[in-house]
Amino acid sequence: MSKTTALIVAAGRSLRMTGDVPKQYRQLAGRMVLRHSLRVFENHPAVDQVVTVIHPDDEGLYSEAAQGMNLAPAVHGGATRQDSVRHGLEALSGTGEPVRVLIHDGARPFVSDNLIDRVIEALETHDAVIPALDVHDTLKRADDARVGETVDRNNLIRAQTPQGFSFRVILEAHRNCARKSLTDDAAVAEASGVHVATVPGAEENFKITQDEDLRRAENIIGRDRETCVGTGFDVHRFEAGKHVRLGGVDIPHGRALAGHSDADVALHALTDALLGAMGDGDIGSHFPPSDPKWKNADSAQFLEHAVARLDAIDGRLIHADLTVICEAPRIGPHRDAMRTRIADILRTTESRISVKATTTEGLGFTGRAEGIAAQAAVTISLPLR
Image (cartoon, rainbow, N blue to C red):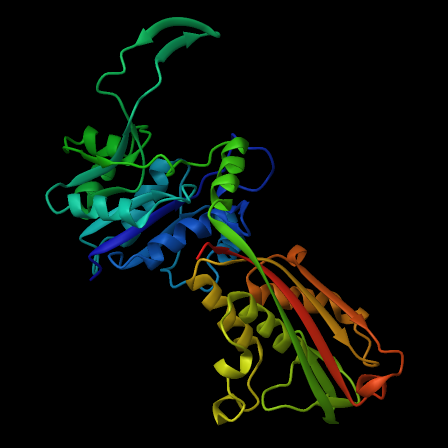
């Protein structure tokens, strides 16, 4: 049984933002906004599982946002946020249901471990807890751009998420309020007579709602980070065979590349470049060629390993540039397939991947068609160390 489940609400349509992509799937420093939120809860030691509520039309976008993460299956939401939360809670009910649930907006990417800790700790003595901030600005009630009155701000607070609840309490409250229209889960609890406690919120834990919020988020996420560049170079000779594997794509050819693994010289160079940018050794130190475990291994798992290590230190890929050096086979006809496959392994978009090819004008071992070389440069963003 899960003691604490994080229910991430990400089924909205972003009606207050420009463009066709919902805000939770917009790019923020090389990752979708939703992925930033999911990652915090997935890595929090007190959260046992993470369940996301999504719009039925967003299956593909969600798969991209959650790629490589250890999450429970997503739940389809409803017509309103309130409906979506209720759908998520119902999916959790029954055998193995959690003791407590943290309900969080997927478009709040800056939720911190400390804030989650405060909510969970308060749930030891309360059935409902929300993070809250004081109201500092003077509040006015207006109609048609004319001020009608000044609102007394004493005792007013700004509610945030994650809002924490005893699971059975909030499930029953949502069932009781299914026909009402309420703006957050604390309001649902209040309408059912549940006392809601508060803990200090955080100014940086704002919700991305409009275009300027996304620009603000970009500025915040760029602080206290540095840009690092790594390079990689690899060579493999030819042997008998019928195809070569480059960038995860099998290309028909009169010979194959020789190596302990599948000899994908392109992915090897990219792996070394990514590890180099992190200052994390090289491909040989992580996957020794003397280890029979890696005999004929798919080199995609080497690059996936490097990506996982980047993710573990909150690193973000900015760009990867690959150059393949050979007389043959021709790379041009396969460039798009290689970019697609590399982007998939690196969990990014093709716009961040460059694949080029060149020859050495008949000079050297590549000019003599004895093998293929590849060089790569990878740019990443890391927290200041």
